[in-house]
Image (cartoon, rainbow, N blue to C red; front, side, top):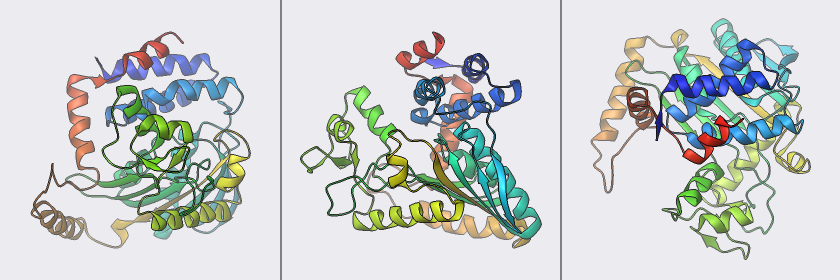
Length: 330
């Protein structure tokens, strides 16, 4: 089932207005959800929207709260999200980060007491569209054990790195678990097994069974001990730079809220010419595509997103009918 972009956006917007969003904020929040589904990340678009509304109704997310600066140190700022909508807080933080980069060459905003930012890649695309290198990450509720451990104390802390490019930006958007839990849920709903090991069952055995991973809520760190170490360091950096909560402290709240996030932007236009950027990236990507494929296609981060976006804008956005009907009924 495919739905036009405008229809999906208008439906989200209608529901948000019923939940006390202003016109402007409802429009942006709805667009961010719609763009996630349009780019093929329905797990953080349409499929995530009902839970977002549930969290508003339970008081975890304040639809009228806005992120605000609490400390300014030149090109570095600390902000408090005031438990507002995570995607709006993240969009505002990256906007400010870009402004700082355009003045100082580099900018950083560390955000505390915010909520799930939905599709993290959105803020990488936002930076790249402004001609900036973008790096951002968030901590999460504990959903991975340390390597060799039995208990979840690490988040899968998504990391985004974006590089602007005239022919199509490079945007890496990855959780530090082998699969995001939204992706695990997608496989579960389709009745499919994960193509690779993705987590642990309740007995601590590595598995590809999405039902077992959903039951245990124990993700498999990418790179095993390396991913676990990277998760720990990103968590500490987010909490220390923002003055907010660590993953363990977020876990003590019972649901994923009051997360800590970091947004970094570098104004590439002040460091290199557009011609130089294009020439270097083209050289690297040509080598990548010429490497040959053992299975499927060899793609750079973000390449499939561009193709998916074009197709879905033309044909309509594929939706899960169950989630779509749920949103229509709100």
